Amino acid sequence: MYKEIANSGAIGDKDINDSTIFPIWSMSKPITVVSVMTLYEKGLIEFEDPVSKYIPEFEDLKCKNGDEVYPCNNELTILHLLTHRSGYSYYGNPEFFTSTIKYDNLNDFISDVADYPVEFEPGSDYIYGISQAILGRLVEVVSGKSFYEYLKEVIFDPLEMNNTKFYLTKKDREYFQPLFINDGKLIGYTNYLDELSYDENNRAYFGGEGLVSTLSDYSNFCKMLLNNGIYNGRRIISKSSIKLMTNNYTQLEYNPFHYGFSLFVLNDSRFDGTNSPNGIYGWSGYHNTHFWIDPENELFGIFLSRAREFSFEIQKEFRRSVYSTF
Image 1 (spheres, rainbow, N blue to C red):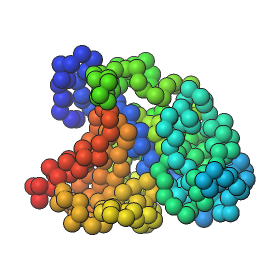
Image 2 (image 1 turned 135 degrees about the horizontal axis):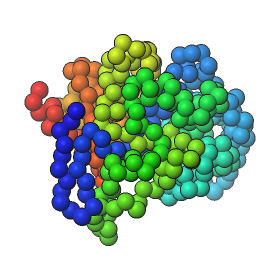
Image 3 (image 1 turned 90 degrees about the vertical axis):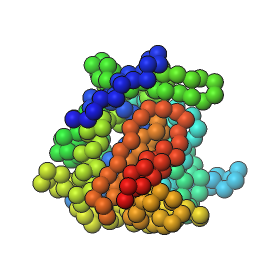
Image 4 (image 1 turned 30 degrees about the horizontal axis):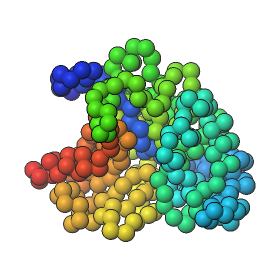
């Protein structure tokens, strides 16, 4: 159990405890990646496979070149989706694609996405976007199950992540942390800016942003990663899969991190300034949720909040506080 944190006393705020549910947004992505790795380990997919092998809608993918749109020369592959080198971005308004108002299943979502031109030739550059939402549909096609059913079978049930899902029941809403928003115009706590419906009957299971979770649930996921893929004696993925997930697929200029499969990996601690060791890896979410895994010191850190606007400084200061004691 975790110590309860009393609310701020502001109107609309709630106490935070082990039962508090948070929308984890992009911290959904590493979970999606692990599910893809289970398919890879079963020999059901290869990273260089064209996505069109499983989802034919991507056979005629279009690329942008300024104002010109032309048939892509490169095939979109699974590796491109895993590494955010697909050419698919986020498009400002979340209702543009990853919307549970617009879509109630991933098949319709994919039909629209595949008709939209990517920003560059797949594999030629890095851009953060909706790639993991596309991977959710890939998992459905390969496994023959809904994406949530597959996640529940291979990750959530084995890891005892009983409160990690794509929806909220009426009872769950009592434990759902309200959003604190501070964008200069709106300041305060609200239950009206979810952006996703979290409807129990909606099957648009967006693997890049759609999950809700709790501190204890996500801790179990981190324990599995820290223990080289094993949780309570049960192997979820292999140590070699975690190595693949954290390899350097994109190194951005002037950045102490490289990017793996929707994971940052610190590879030059001199320029991070937090005393964190090289080799830590993790990710963050839109409403200021953050986590990292530290294999060297055998620890992990999780910070769950629900606030906008987003700040990378939160994780950085959290890590600075932790590693100041080392």
